[in-house]
Image (cartoon, rainbow, N blue to C red; front, side, top):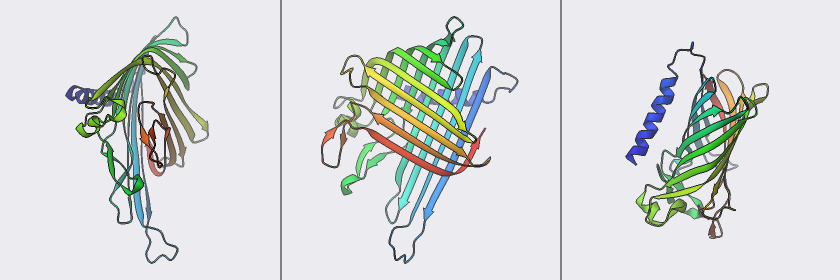
Length: 291
């Protein structure tokens, strides 16, 4: 696990260092965006009832893309975290994301097709709990789960806004580096094991464009097929980000994430266990800055 953490640090340094390159080098294109939003409700002797609450949510995204001749190298780092306190209850986490990705491509015969290799890593920063059924159950933490994906294939760049990647050779490593969660076989690993390796194929759909003045839509759909175990059950990870700019420093944004993983069991309100469609929506209105 130390090697994986070291790799994360190295990746972050490479991405951040690339921002220090001189702007005269037109081979590099850099993007950055950060946002911080808060909401607060205070009630005193309020006859209609309710509870005081305070919440905050933020994200920080960096991108460094290189293009020269037929070669392209795209790097991305996405960080997000959110907290909420309601009434006398303890602080609860509402959002938590750490995602790194890097891909290298080479154009095929002056076409819109590129030979492509991809490496991505995802996990979270802090412990996660299930608060349903009036109980607090520990269900996740840093590196539990974590997902490491490596893939080789081709990508079709229909335009500067739309790309579709087809990776018939893909390996996905699920990491559960926590003894308690590992002992329960969480996130599809065998009980007592801390990793699970899957071999399959990956399809990635990316779209990003300003759909109207000061309104930008970005969506990323990733499908994974395990060739060796229930290939008919496709794992889905679909993220949508809508950013509505108010001025240079204020914006409203909506982020949704839909996940279906056939190897992850969810206990519903009826006590039934099995894979379920997971959905998260985060709305923020506050400070925002692009660079």
